[in-house]
Amino acid sequence: MTTDDSDSTGDMPPEPPEDLANWVVEPLQAQNVGALDQIIAYCEELIEYKTRPVAEGGDDSEGTTVEKKPQKDQSPEERREAQEEVEQLSKEDMKELSDEELRRYGTVEIRKIPCGPGCDGCPHGPYRYLKMRNSKGTPVSVYAGKA
Picture (tube, one colour):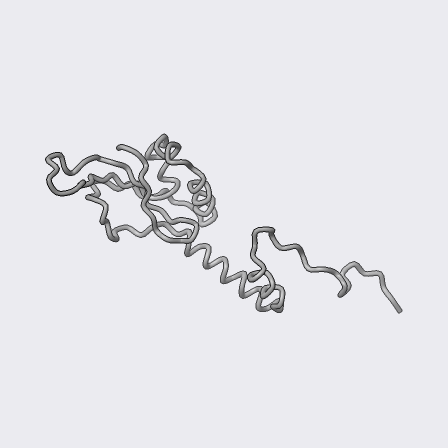
């Protein structure tokens, strides 16, 4: 007795995203359903970890912070979208954003920067820096124009 069921064992797995490397896809395809559920849960936790706001404090080796404007409260999905969006902005576009607009992407720090020994005008500024996480989850500080 044969059945004409579209969910038969001869079907092909779904097509992976084009930009996903084979060294990621092939091991995933070899996993059972339980392991894939665990992988999904881990990936969701990893995304939340990598998109979390940058912690207050930390090493401030680029001058003296005179004011901080913390990142707006956002869900992990909103933070991930903001990370992807800010990485597409040019330096000129970044300088055009207000402090309030920059707070969507991370913490805005107003800093005064020393240029080196022998300068009578040090520290210089104030300058705006956006403290955020890049798509790899690493904290970065990006120049965002004069304050």
